[in-house]
Length: 96
Image 1 (cartoon, helix red, strand yellow):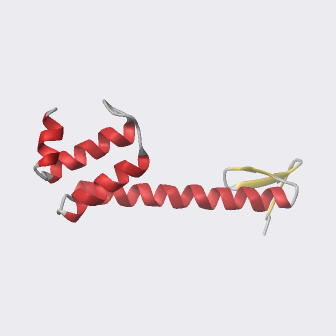
Image 2: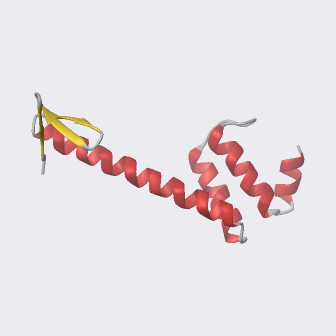
């Protein structure tokens, strides 16, 4: 209740905290897109931790997308991606 009152008054710290709660599902339904919007909102008000959290979320998303591209490329060569390694049988190959 108090967080929502502070958010309604555009308190950047409260918006950041609500973003964390939303990211991790603490007291609210987890929603990564909403959490990112909250971090961006708080960050635009100068809340540095919110700016860092938003940047970290975007970096994590890009890393996951890169890993998915690598896994698809590896599979196209008949391999199985295990982290940064593409394995075909007992051999690690470069799928590119």
